[in-house]
Image (cartoon, rainbow, N blue to C red; front, side, top):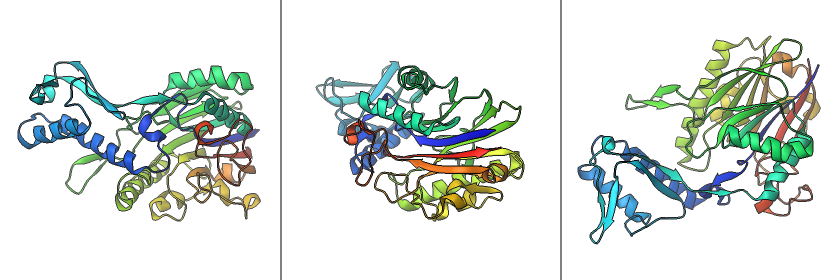
Length: 367
């Protein structure tokens, strides 16, 4: 049977954190995200006394919360039960003495994705025409349902099966799957941890390494491991590479523990956020009996870039031995992007309505 497999970073379907709409790896976004991460960490403390409380007040003040009805354009503090802080003539004062006194969280503000951009995202999905599509940066399963009905169905490209499991990223950029075949099971790795230098456990995956079990019409099983590794943009290159290395090491372990890559039909797909020459990807890219579709002879000599700027391959489809041996075609769908040298779809007229800053990667196999 012929089987088309693909991976596409959607840049979210309907809503996206406002911070992530800033172009490129924005310095502003990096700074705010670092502060949000720090504030979120501080809020989990049992006591807000002393330096902890002072730092919380300083961060809230920095982002405008010390003013009456104060706010900022990037994030808000949700107070569900209990009182976290109040603002009076003397300024901002913490009312909660620690985490047990209130229920709430820090939440990034979101804005709607351009309607034309949504249609252009659907154009990419329709053009790729995958039987199994790994989706990256997808906000929720309800968003997938809405996109399927409102954007893919009019393009005659809708899917009967789709799934997404919430991952570790609070920004709503999770990994999912659209499939023409039934989904038999899903196995999440959001709780996988590694021991840091301080001995404390830290989560391995920035989002998840979700394992989707897909039932093929002939009774065989296709396994999709959907990934979105640590980005290049926020944090130092060394810390980003170190985190990404932990992630690729863990995916390799999962593959060797759970699958027979000589015989099983396994796909590892997603946005790996590094080029193939990066040492952080080496554990995964050197896994025995697993190959990048771009290594196929029929793709030799063709440009591999998949990310805005025309230089980097960040998006990957890795296939187990029987799938790689069965490759009949490989391609990159770049027409949803807005950049020099690419002839886009007619409705892509600028960055604001581009489908994504990533291209879709696809391969067709006959197994």
